[in-house]
Image 1 (cartoon, rainbow, N blue to C red):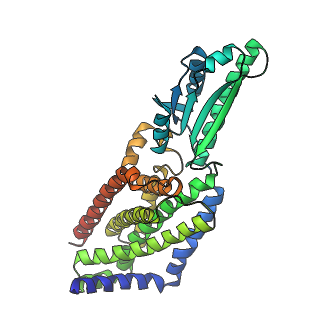
Image 2: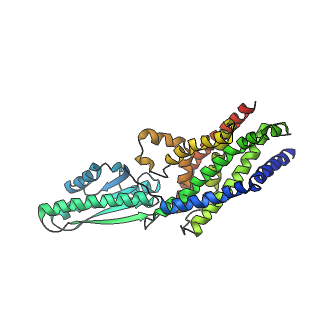
Image 3: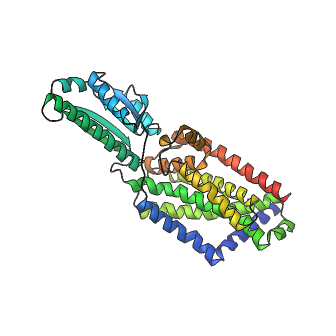
Length: 370
């Protein structure tokens, strides 16, 4: 009973320290509003090495030529050859590919006889910018392919393209950006709050008083961590509400699954922040350490550029990045309506990262004060 009383007192102390200070209150409210407006309205992205799969039901020379033209640009990278339409569906659902190309069985025959020939392109609209650019390139290549045939045989271009975008039919970039901001802002605010919590105490000279109080190091760390998780969760709820009711982005999934994913992610970010704070001797050092980690974590998450467009060594590094798992979980729950059975590998990965982060925070905190 005494343990819970002590922890509750610490959490109350941390929350009051933030809420009583006008600057801290403003820091909780104003930055998320500014950031979500800037990123939600102004952010754009470019893509390369777009993963795609092809279902070639034709097997003819014309089909092979179009696939060669597609890969010859360097923009597309064949991930797999599909055997059925269900293979393409599965690979798009699992985010293994961005584009699924289906070549019908009569493609080459229709071209040889001068009749219109169709290609089907299915795009993963969860990342609207990537899908739109990839479809644009594929359509340009098909148009050039058709124009070349027309120049050789005379007449109009015989190639017709049918396109569909899943999870984001109109390819609205904001539908990808804003749900991703839930993860980005949770990362920034949780790491920064955790990093400043102990460093602030050291700089103000109150940390030594805390050590001689009737709290052991584990209780101090737990109290600060819970307070940071609470403030981070409040900010995340605010951003989710803005995404749903201001930007009108349709929410497809389970709110409880989304809450679980966000909570795990915030706990991980808080633990990383507390680890930074354990080593920082001043607020300046805590801030520098925070932004030293934040930029690579965001850049290696797939938020700014697709992971498939990165060099292989950086793709491997993303496996250590909690931001990658948090971002994908939130976007898939929000836009796709994915359930736990679809997401359990991601939940397993972020649980491992969470456990490692919490252990690192505990170890570093005990090591620095011992």
